[in-house]
Amino acid sequence: MKISNFLINALSFILITVLGTFSVNSKPIDIKISHATNISSFKGETWEYFKNLANKSLGNKINITHNHSAQLYGQSEGIQALQAGAVHFISPGAPLLTGAFPKMAVFGLPLMYDPPEEIREIADSPEIGGKIFAEMPAKNLKFLAFWFNGYRNVGSTKGPILSIEDLSKIKIRTPGGKIYRDTFKALGGNPVGVAWKEIHTALQQGLVDAIEPTMNAWQSQKLYELAPDITYTKHILSVYIVATNAKWWDGLSPDVRSKLKSAIDKTTEWNWREGKKASIDAVSAMT
Image (cartoon, rainbow, N blue to C red):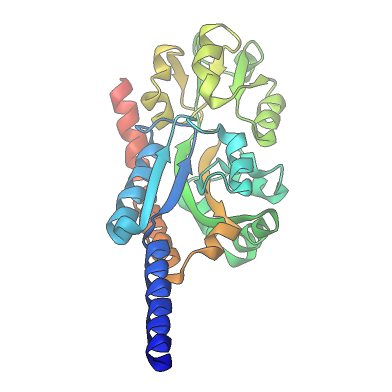
């Protein structure tokens, strides 16, 4: 009888342990992507490409939500949210990270990179990009990828910008990164910091007279309807830093982490391959 009770108790323990483990492991991992542009933007399309690859690879092991259009956080707030673990993937413009990582400014220098492959070579370099990205885990961030966005171009509600003198007569919206403001100040302009989600209102209410996004953003956000005079300035090549929460990433199982990284890598190749075409298509759609 004692042996029988022992076996029953042992089997019960094993069943509880196995079933309990199965229950925990079968719960999908919630993954939140957050960014400020809309889903039809090139960034939105790139994240959708990643989401589809990740779902195909991991199936019901994950539950990915693609939160676009600042549904959760704006660009700057998204960085803090990622550090806190409130979201899991972000992709801000490189200059927006210069507050925490000043060396990121190298990826936002004006009039520097043409063709775009030059900036990717710097990011891929162990001596430059490697050392810069290695600073991120100290802030609970982990670098995953370097994505293409396109060249930024100035457009105005008050006629085309054809000279440096024209810049001094307008208020131009710039993102939060210091390098954007410093660039236009050096050119004699009047930069005004406005969050991306507020850009339409700022133009409509006259808080700014001009903006300077990439061509795919001009088209996907229909900004050309508000500021129709666009000058092809190509003053800054815009790139995105794809990052995740370092502690969350390191806590994933090796299998899940490997498959997510593979999806990110494949998405990065798609992003760079399709990026130039997206800019050309955007110009065609606006003309």
